[in-house]
Length: 258
Image (tube, rainbow, N blue to C red; front, side):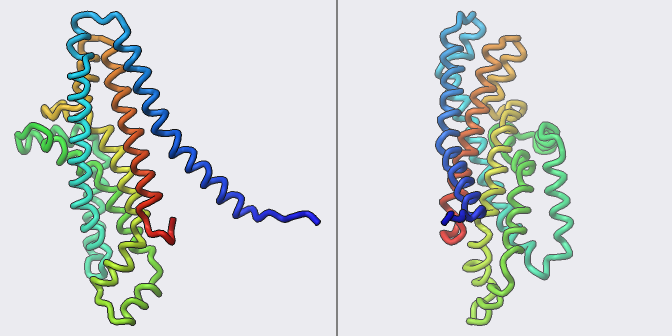
């Protein structure tokens, strides 16, 4: 008698194995890529101009500044987008939903460099926060929209059941709607994180530091080694951030939905 295999179970198991393999390989690929480029750069015959930028002190400082900008952008996005997304799913807030979604859409659609420059011209501020605030505006939409969609897709019968046992609207939101929306919120945050790493290179235009300084230096002085090193470090950081986001999606959501 021939055994019958359930194609749904087979597909689910295969996708799960592929996801686990990707989670294991992605950080390795990032480290190998960055390591190979750094070995190539430091073993090259660098001239006096390249040595000024391609040294461990400068690269570590630029990478650390890039991480700080990314963290600042992420904190701003989480503090603004998640509470705003929760508010916009309330029945009384429906008339203003198009306004806020439109503003967030404009932020993501507009060129990031234009948003950074406009914010600088408006505030005349420089530094990490002068870059983080406009870049948070650019990165806001994925978390805001996913928060709203995640809460709206919760089964209404679960909400009614919570209210039926005496929970207040706030308690239902905190104990039923928000936990079930966590997977989608984390997916949006993962997208915003990768977007923040990429756009953080623009912080150099407002003296915010970061790897954009290395990339811009390599471009201005026509040194391919400097340019490729800065770009590779940014790519490697984006891969690692995306990997951390994938881990959060897999392990921080409700156990029943993993």
